[in-house]
Length: 143
Image 1 (cartoon, one colour):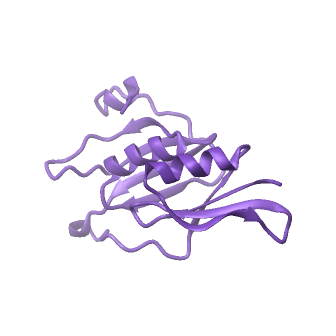
Image 2 (cartoon, helix red, strand yellow; image 1 turned 120 degrees about the vertical axis):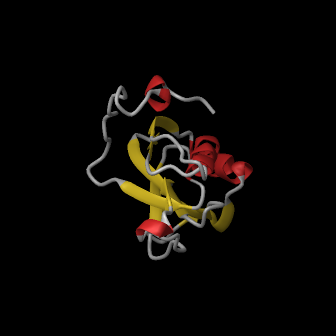
């Protein structure tokens, strides 16, 4: 996985990357480092910052850019009151220009198809996937 200089610098020397978007998703997953690697393959993510991993391989913060927006990740820390919970009631929504290419890349990376891409009643092409970390991703493009 490619990492930026900011991702490999010590926290004291690390520049803070720009946060893109007005509302930023912050996902707690089982394996933030592995999730970032998956999001790179599936959604073309670029890692822009990461706190060092602890002796258990967990990181408290990882910052990605996906499709022009920031997405942030961390591992669960149950000993500090932040246990891992199954994602529910949230869907990550990607508005893309070439839904077939985006969807196919995510499936080839290991995402599970929940709803195949199809023209929806509102007129756009839309489909849903679930990533290996339990997060649901929707994609939409004009028909």
